Length: 171
Image 1: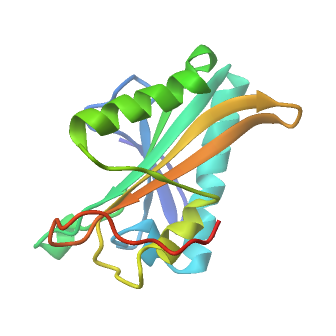
Image 2: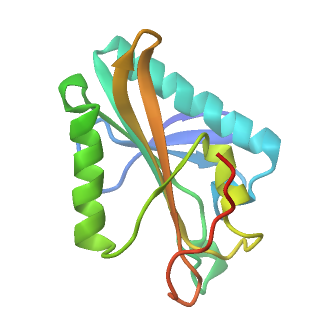
């Protein structure tokens, strides 16, 4: 079900949602992943994600945001989906980091996430390989004098399953 739409981006309820407020942010025109989007589309997607974060913050919640990019043999299956999942504020900070670490150990044995400063930095960490699969996470971090900090993490792998890419030190 479409919740909101513009000429560039739409928000839809997530199929098989984690909770009733789990939504996806998607481009109207086909794009395989955020890293492959032109800057104007990245900006339009970010505007919608920020609006969702504000809406959920007004309701006393924080958001987990993630994108997974795994190239598929069929190009129609390569459609970007950014997941936005509101969670209770009590589950932020260390608890969110611990949950990400536990899920990584269980589902991506041996993988490590690299901290990055923004979703836009994903492309800079793929060694110029647009077919490299990746998982990007934004989790609500600790509270500071400036408010809740957001922590961003990236795991990128070689297309042939050969392990993590060597990433450029750009933090």
